[in-house]
Image (cartoon, rainbow, N blue to C red):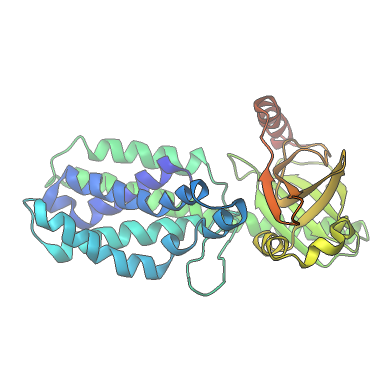
Length: 332
């Protein structure tokens, strides 16, 4: 999830663990604990694109990290804070660390919760930024800070924020199941043969859902809103995996395929080859094979070394996407 959401969740968890004893410092250190796992993004400054993608939401988002580093941070804080309870601080950081990947597991990218095992947990029930999850939670947290640490109202608002946010997560699971069934029914009614269906919510909401459908030579992409009154329409994107030719056996190419879970297309433009991660869709609702959200140029130098270069995103395309999403969300 986005940084603000993780800060809010971490702060609420910190309050639940030590709020009665240390007051707003529990919010502060909880927020820090909720932020630390995302420091893995710094890897992009020290390594290549493929390695940085593999590292993202890897070790720092694992159970192992939470268990190993919580007592380290707990010991450090207990050394200089007036409240010297090593166990209490360790529990605060543990819950701050572990709730971060548990929440991220509900997004499309997912987390390597069980690192070092190569298994990325991704339920794909919520977009990385969702106001309906974050804003009520944030309001409750602000109310928490208005009361003394021993106040029952402080405890009430913190619990309320945790209950509302957790309940919303459960609702997104139900919505995913309902949307998935709609896509399956549409594929059946249109007599489309397929191997797999991958569903997820579109940006900023859980009303409009999208599905990637794996067929023999193409991927189909469809959208469904709970306000729809017409049949689902699917757009076709040729896989063109044959464009990779001999490059398909390259180590970095194989790793990128693994990162995308096999949901990718290959495109050619002006003698350049591009790897398109299909899991995150395009910068708009209408069919556009050139505007994938995550698109990487596959560059090969004179020595045959392969590098992946992410193509920049156009802000105007992003504005257009939000406009298209809002229009489509209201139904077809």
